[in-house]
Length: 461
Image 1 (tube, rainbow, N blue to C red):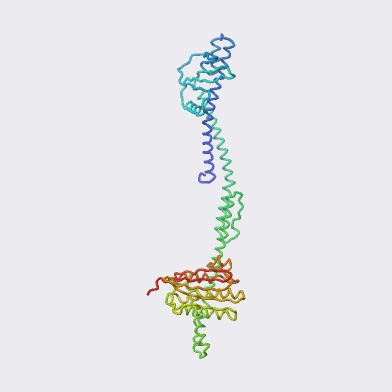
Image 2 (cartoon, rainbow, N blue to C red):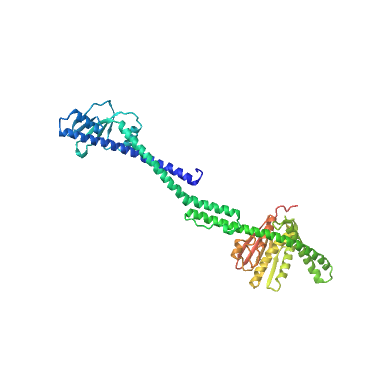
């Protein structure tokens, strides 16, 4: 029980209520002692009035009056004259004197604690002001034992009442915590356990309904987390299914392309000058497709194989990309330009670099063609001491907000209807495999610029 939230609330409530009662008990017991002594003074003054009514009272009556007042003797002071009103033998010397006239509170508390923890029965003198202006002062002697016994009884009653109040308060708080906190928290826990059993089931996502603000905020956070997790799991499942489907398609496509390679070998033997000029490009395209299929089968489409770094002439790779995309553009008013130094040699995987630049140029071409207007795509390259820089710029409409937000996320950063948004993801992964990075330089209504940065580290040798 004490390991539960409500159980700890119960224990803490009892402790705090008892502490509060103890803090109340000390001044209360001091006030009780003051009232007790003042009552004895009043009763003693009333007893002394019988002496004023009859100067000659019998010793038996005097003893009875003192017994009823609970004192041994009474001294009144009137007109600066101290007068012994009633008296009887005192069984022991007076050990302490207490003046109740204008005594500060801290002294009353101190005297009360001394009385409470003094187990003896000493004789004490008590001085106070007579009631109804009955004189200047009244003084009595009495035993402290009965006072202490009365204080103990009073204190025990207070403690018993405090215990009852503590138990009742703690019980009410216990049930309140159970209803307002523990029950809603257990409900949240049940939702979490239910969702963990079948996270793909949207019916198990919690619907925030708590009346407590903090719990409602917790339920809202859990709802958002479960919604995002369910979407991520569904996307992962779709990716797994897609990967399996791509592997199957790649298997059959590789066989088809392998057959196409055999035909291109014969085409290369043709004497037609146009065929001779186009055949190498066709052979290179089919070879790249075969390699891509083999990579997909080998790695399940999850990761790209590590690049085979070699020295390549960048201008030749860019020229192949431009020729291919110019052919794909057809009759659309789209111009291509390239500014690549003829002697610029980079260290990279030729096939992968072709795919990177090809994806960027293809995306630019599709964006411009989709607008139905003319445009230009340019590829520029330069180098510094540590890097090679390749930029692909276009005069298209720029990337839409969704594409900017999910720029390098698969299936979320597509810029056109029907697009999967994989081109930039693949390009960024291939560049990272080279130790470089793919960056978005700018994108607005005047066009988009991407920059490829490849490190020169390890170039020597």
